[in-house]
Image (cartoon, rainbow over all chains, first blue to last red):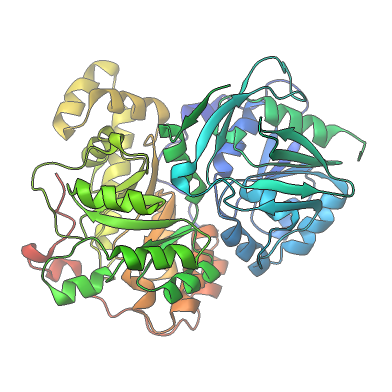
Length: 218
Length: 295
């Protein structure tokens, strides 16, 4: 195949990432578009063995998958073009998937407009629910289900969606102080409307690795 | 609980979400829809694409706010718009419209021949052009949250985009090899802030996302720029000045994702119809070169 991307040397923070801590779990990051590299860096800091997923065969042997932030319309379009929709739906029946922002949108059953979705989670999402880019914001809140819950977590919302409604097997697991839902879980499927990959705080990625490791689907 | 609106992390964060994607110039709401349907991650709303700005001559200014608003209504993806270099009032107007990113752009006629906009004072993030590392770090020092290598807009000739990307990444590789005591003189020589040089040396990359722009006309051009190390692609005249814009737009989107897969690139490059006619960048008289605008 073609030459490797050559322009700059591997950043130092990548080099020291592997080999620390727990089991070397194989986790995929959907790399069609968006901030997949930031997820990769976070996962590697936790010792995971990370694969970039661009085609269906890249899913083989993975224990979990992250769908990153990006533009959900562009990612959906590329999923369709490269026959990833069905393989991803099948993967999500048995494995952990975490979607951040655009990834959360793609996991939903309904987003109120016509665009390709995986439709794996019983939830309805509203895109750009806080407004345009000038309405993007950061906030610090306590997250009860991650490590050291008493320590505030810095959430970054960028043209972020909110979860309008959950039903069936899906549960709202995190809300803003005004009650709007910003994270939901359905078994091993997990959706957040914010971007833990843009922080240096690895607690959400740790939570996801534990979810991917767990046997249960509930 | 503390809520902080549009800090630098949030401004830079939107560009992080655009990575691996294609941002397309559009001049009508219909073109914006075609771009969105083709998988563009954002559109640049403007009255004339660079090739037409070149052909028409005269002064190129910020687009009519009415047009920008109509394009914002037409699509769900982010909408960017251009203001002239140094024209901070055009930037204020675009911010008040609620555009998602402002491009302080050399494609328009500069309004100030010495100073760029102080971009720290705005809530809306800015993208700016660069030809080399010094120019990139001066713009970031002024508050730009995203960069793009300039290339030579409206030509369909990728050579200047390649030159600028090689220059930026070559300078970064050189900087990373320097012992700390040589960084100050390096910063002086490239006319960049010292602290940002130290940051680049530590990170091994620019502190913000960097796309390629200016002259990209084919899927192979887009993949070439991606393999050279840019984070994503701007296509200006290359799409809507070609024979089959929708097909070409989709092909460039696919090539930007699968930039390292020659078989995919071969597949998407087939039967695209006429590329934009283009104009060799070296044949341009100095007065018509856009990339040299910027200080």
